[in-house]
Amino acid sequence: MSVLLATSIEQVDGYAVRMARLGADKVGTPLILMHGYPENLQVWCRLAPLLARERPVIAFDWPGMGESAPWKGGATPRRMAERLRRLLDAWGLDRVHLLGSDMGGQPSLVAAARFPDRIRSVVVMNSLVMGHIETSWEIEVLRQYRWNLEILRHLPSIVFFRARQTFLARQRSVPKAVLEDFWRCFRRTDVRQFIVRMCAGYQGQLAKLPDDYRRITCPVLVLWGDSDKHFPVKQAEALRAELQDGTMHVVAGGHHWMMLEKPDALATRMERFFLERVRDLSE
Image (cartoon, rainbow, N blue to C red):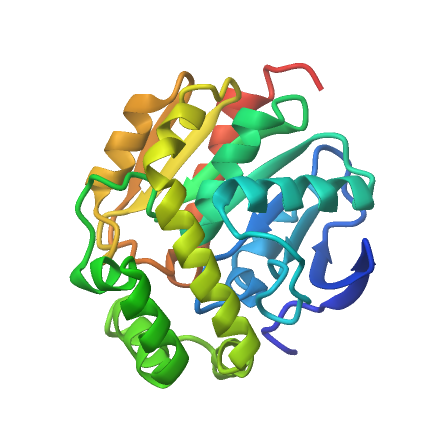
């Protein structure tokens, strides 16, 4: 049995979008999973089936990443949030829960702030959410446009190798099929060119994002790994301080790809969040 999520290609506004649908037999508000880089939707291969025991789950490759076609226009968190809304419209989804990790975290928060009638709750994990809070030296380098342009354009294998080294505990491994899917997509020039655009767009908008965070009215779970080598828990604490209705939980031994190394712990904590903070709200 394959460890990979079963995927399909759907057309949205004339663009191809790769996605995985789980829990189609479940009722309730769907949960949308949003990845970062250098991964794609397969980063959720261990966590998504657990979450789909209780509700419909959709994972997708961001337009321009994975196997999804690039869309015209910019790639700031606010633009990405608008693309998410277009996807929800195309899928006929009025209200959803969001789970965003890495560069999927900022658009999930922005969407909650700007489209409050569409977003019922947000879980954000291990992301660059505060520009003034420390990160790893690698992230600092990649936040500089000329550096990330050259590194991502000419040294993709080094970026990918470094991610494998630092995103998980040393004794952990990613299933071979998942790594192959990540690399097959990330090695494409057009995908890396989009990521360069996205890095520039995120960096340019990062200082303004706390204004959006303060506007969020739905419940937010800030779910962070205490061993993330790139985005320390200080990022989570600073985000939690800006939220009106924020809950924070630190996962012991959780690294950047903790959805691959600790899926059971994450699913348990998220279900508790949905039970305690979300289900008392009206559908």
